[in-house]
Image (cartoon, rainbow, N blue to C red; front, side, top):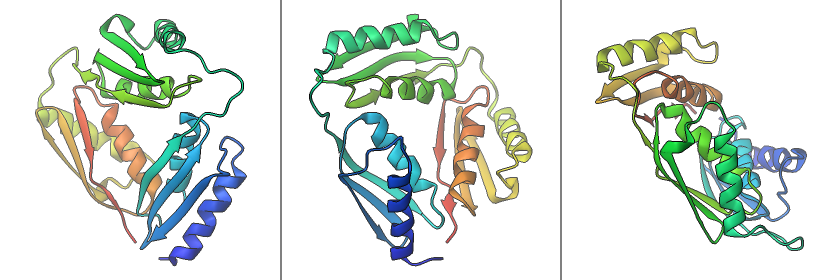
Length: 220
């Protein structure tokens, strides 16, 4: 495993290289491979993208996000009402989402999502869409997953393992899969962050899954 200073250098370089991110006020610290990002970013998009950029660096074990969103004026930011209208329009026009089951509220630039979706992957999909709206500071995701049909835990586990086995980014032998009442728990050690993310995505897209607890560790 590389030393903390080398990891920090790569993260800083990555943040300043990536034109999607304004990292001019972001501070990076690394302690035994655990990264903390702090400071200010101009949008929620910058915040989530900076976090993902840090995860992409070799030998990063974990990432803590202590960044805050501080929009820069001018121009004037949209009102809460305008943000809510935009959010509802985005959901309405997306064929993958049934917006009639989702309630959107906005207070002080913070979007709160309540209601249900019928697949676990849609929960994060909706949250990510909201994060791209101008004026959004944070997203409180309270969406519940209610699958359209009940699938036995044993079958869910088999389907998750099969998906991991098909995934070129994951060695299924590294991942232990447990399922209890539709909640998938992934544990074990994987060699790269990309494998951890891919395994979580594979579980999230599996039918019948209500939640995914990703306890996979990136091996040092």
